[in-house]
Image 1 (cartoon, rainbow, N blue to C red):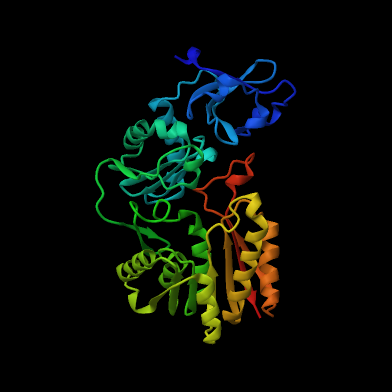
Image 2 (image 1 turned 180 degrees about the vertical axis):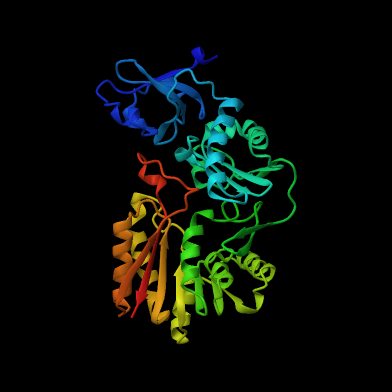
Length: 397
């Protein structure tokens, strides 16, 4: 019963305006915390009140996290159950079906889709659920049933690899909740075919967020030589080949990811124009420079070098180093794409780090395009962290 829910309360002088205006998180230092509130189990559904004891909404609590509470519903009496989940999923699905003709996309992008801490990627008949918050993990079975009812998928996988799960005290076991899955899944995107290893690959198996940036880079690549660094399963390289690139070399530290990229190239009939090189990206970039290699289009899409504010300065130095090593590999008049998925490094600081690296390499550049995540990765305007992805494209003299 909702009237049996515990209550948590903002400190008396804490302004609730941000919460009322849509900010979805309540930090631990904003609340009145006592033995009772600290003893709440992670994932507990509670009512949030302001300092005057007026209800603000229904929240999920995580007493061990800096983010103590996440807003689920502005209705303090909302029943957080399978029906509630289904309503949120149907709303998210309507948007994706407007965007895409085929069921391959991010279905739920956490707070921006009204499901805090929840990531859902769809791969045709397979849905991959990442419940990165304790409340969602506790309702994983309800999520699975709601997904089947709302979307018609036949297989639901719970992926437990999210870094945030450790902060919520959750396990790391990936399991098939519904249906069965015994092989990687082919994914059509931007004219190419990618192969997603959903059970043991990185994150949910594929990065849908770069789809529009793949497409932009591919538009530069017709008849060109392409270098795709930090390639994972061939994101930029395969899209470029599908648009008529002369050749693509994919560089990644994971042999498994490169094997999937090769499978994708073969499925797309592009295997004869595709090559891979396994190794640390910085080492391979340095080696290619020593070899005097040149490419018409170079794309670097590294992991988050600045996953937190504490790591920001080191992360910016790493982004600068990537740019410095990649720029000499671009033939005169060619293009360099640099990407960051670090929310702590905002666009301005990432752009400045990239420009410094290009300048230190002795190259002059024009910034021709700035890209972000696709529309299936909506941003919550009140939450800067939801707009994490930046892609910068330069033309080098």
